[in-house]
Each structure stands twice: as C-alpha cells, then as structure tokens.
Image 1: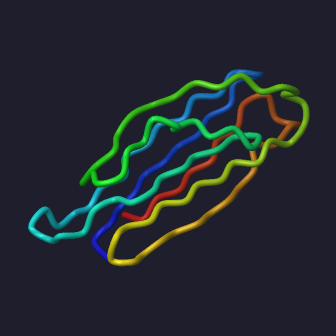
Image 2 (image 1 turned 90 degrees about the vertical axis):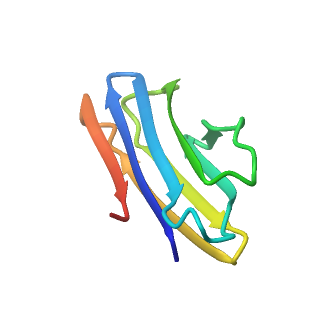
Image 3 (image 1 turned 180 degrees about the horizontal axis):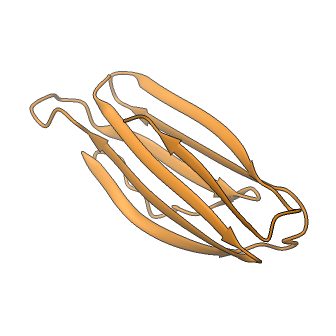
Length: 105
C-alpha cells in the first residue's frame, strides 16, 4: 500500500471546513487513485474527484442542516491495485467547535 491520506474536518457552529491530502507515495508505481469520497451528513463533498490521479488535494465547505445534532463524517479511498480504506467519525452536536481527523502518516 503506497497511499497516504490526511483529512481534517472542522466544525464551527453550522460551518464545516474539510481539508484533504490523499496521494500515492510511490510515483514510479502503476498504482492510481480509483475513488475518493468524503461525506458530511451523507453529502459527498468531493463530487469532482476523477479516477486515475496520483494525488488529490484541496478543501471544501459545507453548512450543517442542524449544527446541534451529531453529524456523521465518512471517507473512503481506493486504488487500482486493489486497496481501500473506509473510516467514519462524528462531529458532535453538543460542541460548538469540533474536529475529526483521519491520518495514515
């Protein structure tokens, strides 16, 4: 497995900011990213992901429908070798500010 990811999803009231860096670390390998999804409240924040990349880096904003309720955060990434990772966490509704981190490094 030559994929590393660092994903941080931060909540500030109803506003959510998601930052991500997903990459194949061995640039000489034929391994490519096949799929990447990052969702908050079931909404995919990266619908513009295109398969066949070595890296996908960026940030996205989202507004929570009800910031006082828990908001599920999920992500999955897969490659053409095949390899995949699926993780989930929650932005807690009782906290005005909260963070979720996924880090393979």
